[in-house]
Image 1: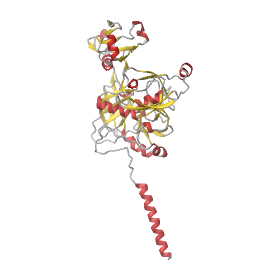
Image 2: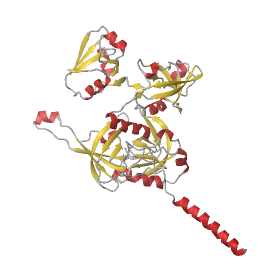
Image 3: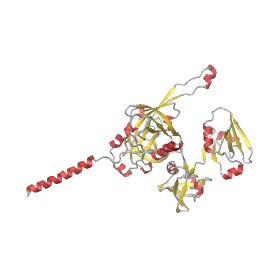
Image 4: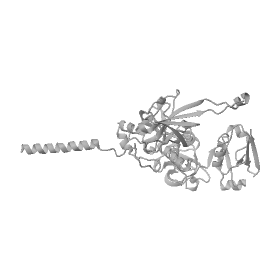
Length: 459
């Protein structure tokens, strides 16, 4: 009998030991670090559970998945020739090469890398060094200064490890994160912290994830990952009097970065979907001048003509509480979500109207207005009523003028030509003004409210 009991006890102990070993050694099925030879259709996305990420405080797995996917980016730029030197000394002065450095994140096995626009800005030559010290020349695929995101490409000799985009909307304040980059020209360096805030507005019409993970010069363009190793942000900025880390750093949310690189790949430029509203962000103005008591949300001050908001049931005075069931407490919450959307996408707004909650679908439209480079004029596409009123079929209408041009009577006029180049819409205007040469004579043709043609000559 004792012998039988002993055999049974040994059997039970063996079974338990086998189960424990299986659990300890089972493979990780949620890995975002990959060297698979199957090429992803664009860039992979891994929407792992935020709960699982939040429960773990072991950073070794995330660090191991990330360090080999973060690269060092070197930007070599040469100053343009100096016209004064050419005039006085009769030779073409060539500036000294200037070298800037930053980081980047490999997002596909064949060498696509996301980084910051300011890391590669004005580059005449780009060089990427992997964590294994292999160096490659890189080409710029495209960039977006508004979100500070750029996409570059190398031609590797081998299949590269890469990171999958995570869902930055699912991240939570207080969640552990790692910042991985190349500060001070070092190889991949890992620092840890928590998410301190989301949708942080730094006054540049951008929204960032704020973290207290240490970020220093050279970290720009590096990875912000959760404890699963999912890419939830691209490190981009710090707030510091000295230029070095003092406790706050910021990252472009991954949902925005992913949308920007996909737009660059598919369209060559970023496609922005807008609601078409203006708002009042000052709590004092809302309370004292508008008499608004409900201050949590986005107050709809006005609706842009021809926009998706105008074509929907949205009205002035509505307060946007949620967008696609995501809570909106301030304007930055709304803009953060919309930056990951394109024209034609439909969003559902939960709004408060006179104390009653309503749900309104809105089809996002293309941006109707932009700020023109060099002159700083704000212009918008013509509506049908504008075309009829001004007697023109093409052009852009000036809606706002900077202080140094306010004496010219430009506001309300329609720009139709710059020199001999026709302007049909804001995209034409943006392209033409971006390529104007400073200090060169420019002739701007406009139509006033009486249908008369005017010309402004800038020298």
